[in-house]
Length: 622
Image 1 (tube, helix red, strand yellow):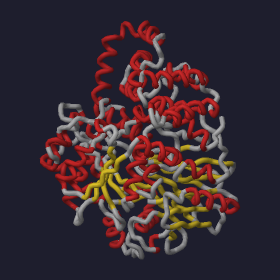
Image 2 (spheres, one colour):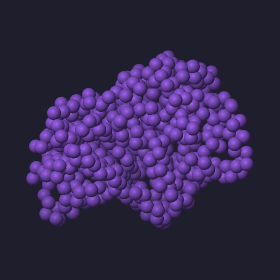
Image 3 (cartoon, helix red, strand yellow):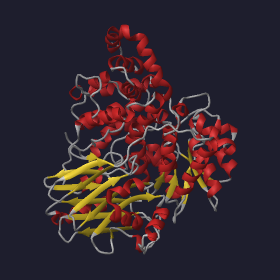
């Protein structure tokens, strides 16, 4: 796991120092080594920061150059089927000097080009330079576990693993993107293809570009969701999961597991202990001041059941206040949902781990969220209420804009009645009317102008022809997971030089699970019933039958107490740094939260605070 950066274009060699600045800005992503490559033609400069997980020797250092000197690879990721791929390449007469996955990826790309990409069971972002053809391939994995950002500055193409890395080059203007701010207010994270920095885009999941120094490029997707329904027995599903976890345990560096006590992380622990030759280390964060919001009991029960070496990391409000500046500074883009990952990643790093397994992806694959129940209900309700849609929307729009239910109900009535629109209504943080009140200049007449039109069309295409629970699952994979959870896992893990692996997104297991019959994702009395059934007696009863809780922090309490002054200042600074915001509306929301937190909820004022803090820290103007 690493960080990559580069510049392509005529005269790129003149900006070699900018690439040095970019890899210096990613020191946290790769504390074990760094390297720079400058092409003989002077049109391509590549940089790399290394976190050594597989093959800790110098033989696996990057940028990695092919034996003939023509191909150069910078690669950030882990390929879990690299041994099988290496065996196939060896049978074709190719030799290897390293024992890790990077050389396998290089030789496979050298041999097959973009046709190699769907063969990688991997999380990755990479750039491959072909000096002979003067072509740069940039690509990343099918779900976007390892983000890749790019921008064009004059005749130069710049790319990097983080948005902040591009800013560090000194070539990218520090200007915030208004469309990105709009999408952040709506969904709690900036939505693709935009980023918080104007002119910087994120590559689509399973996307790749072939770029030339003269600025020409071609773009495509190398993998798409299929629509085949497939039945698997419980034994087949469990065996597939066991194989996925086994593949993700491959490491030459210390490795452990996050354990919240929920179904997903507990299932990974159960599978890992059956395949590991050593005692597994597990970690969980607990809140001694708010025991009702802690999952310590369940995590401890699972750790004892599985016989792991378990570490509980207590966090108090005062400790959170001390850690908050560093946690906020670790954000690559503003996000309302990353501090929990920062805390557990910090604990894992302090324990001596360099890689951990996480349960992200289980809820999306097996219907773990309330949306799998709510979106079908919304469609049914809309049909019943269709006769009163317009007067009801008008009436609700007159209600207190920060009372959550009326505001979202107004969006519900405004939105055209289909699965995608109701999914988006359900996922929104601020409603259309609330954003119009906060920042009128951001809002267009359409009920939801917070999404890029091409991205909106991509979501429609993604669910075209799908049954409703399959559609919600795919939207969760691409939208909430892809735009929030995966980015948070990447950035907050790498802030501590920690690789976070996601076995539920193993290519073989996830594709097989996505192709399960739609009934597999229908909510039942037991959360994720289809998957729990497959796990059988691998999970103790108290874990298998517990309701969905989610790994969240007691921020509502902290925001009213230890963090109150910090939040007040952050929200005040938002208007100073983003003058499209109305200061009186922002402060009114914060005051309402302080007096009636259960009505407002903590996430909305927290999101405003994070945005204000980010714009101020990174000096992003409009």
